[in-house]
Length: 267
Image 1 (cartoon, one colour):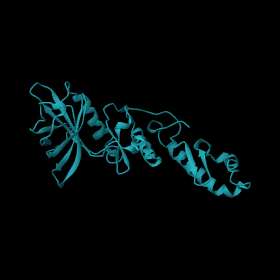
Image 2: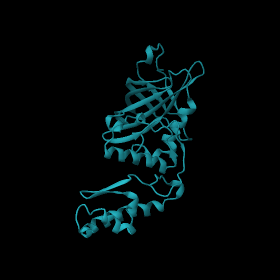
Image 3: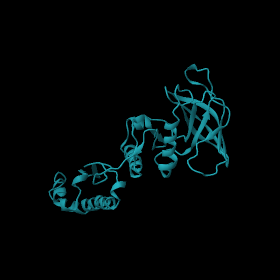
Image 4: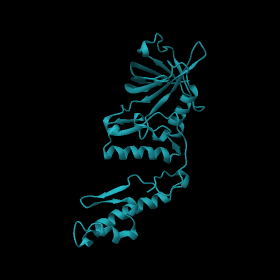
């Protein structure tokens, strides 16, 4: 059984209780034989709420001499620990959305549990450090916003909805968003017709079209929108046709995805 040992760490709210120093057993999702031993040092308190305390520290892996920056989410100091909630979140990271780690969600190094003397089971979820909520998340650029939508799409494409998608749950790591806090994630099937990332599509230097208008049968109408550029809009036809074909190709690709796997935003 894999285990985790924590180094010294500050306690929240001037609490007299300290984190356990004994080895914590890993919550195992299947029958895989896991014997690794993990150690986290240099723990620093970064957030503390009624039910959850969050630390940042350096994780030493059994097969890697270089320490990895991680975040430890725990209910150790909560009045009522929530083992089932943490187990559900670990299942989301390691079972249902495992292929999205380092892509849309942080890498998960495991959920470790502590059996206290009072019979309470405290949880320690260890995730890769993907930064903090930043001004880019609160006031997103178009590029960052598009990447957030991509991340949400990946989760929906896997058949789940987040359940609490707020700004505090979107982190920024070198310009890439990562979605956290999967406590309330649940299976979800969208039933709409088409996936749309951005409602408006800009043809650089010419016009910003509504995506819903970018269809092969609308070519004359689309060119008529460019009369502010020239009386002879036919010279723009190749550019507009190229843009239309790009959008139509995305539609064709999306229609081939099984309905139960689709994420859609209505036009």
